[in-house]
Length: 262
Ligand code: MF3
Ligand code: CO
Image (tube, rainbow, N blue to C red; front, side, top):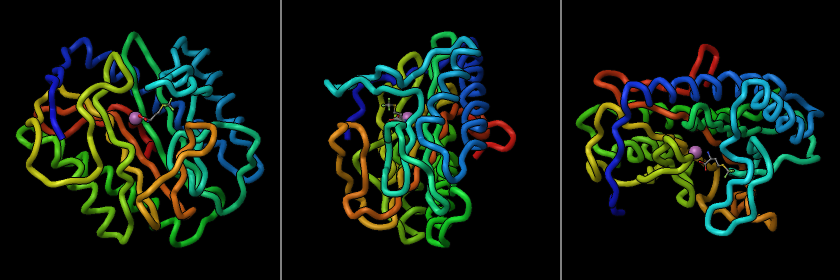
């Protein structure tokens, strides 16, 4: 892969704005998680998300998003259940005990985006689902641990892949992490796999959204007719975790985390 564009170094003011955006994302995502129980319809998550965005004077990062001629994304939160990998559209589907639920949420605050995702069990889920969720979360944090000055961009994906595959799972190739700032998706792409030691060196002030999607079975995905929902090609479970993260002189700062966050 190539790295054509310079990665911006955020100023103190920009970092303050991104911290604020990240805090809103974390608070709202936590409230969304707390709604997850059997019988809840996936569109109910979108109602709460939209209400919180409105109440706080924010703008959704997702509503109307239309990359590359896709139909505009119609909701404030992506809700993906079980074999749905990402970008599930909230609707009349009811959650059932034993499902796993992925919530992906982003907002704009004072011109800057925050983006985060989490997968949780609904009621209690299978041991395998539990291991998948744990491995995916862990892989995200292994990737984040690489986000220190002097490391290279591909070290992030390498660490993610190592943890996910070490747990016996596969890493989705078709979707990647990304730069984030005044746009939801900025260069560079951040794959969740690959060789270490490639690409630009990381510097304090860079911000990336890191978002591994990890599958029980095949890494391959296919699109549903709605043109948004990606599902595993073999119908097995998938999990997704994401944080917006600032590289600092010291430990990486997870902008979308508050107490009790993933
Ligand atoms: N975290 C997801 C991503 O970066 C959010 C997608 S927003 C949507 O791809 F509008 F495209 F759904
Ligand atoms: Co993202």
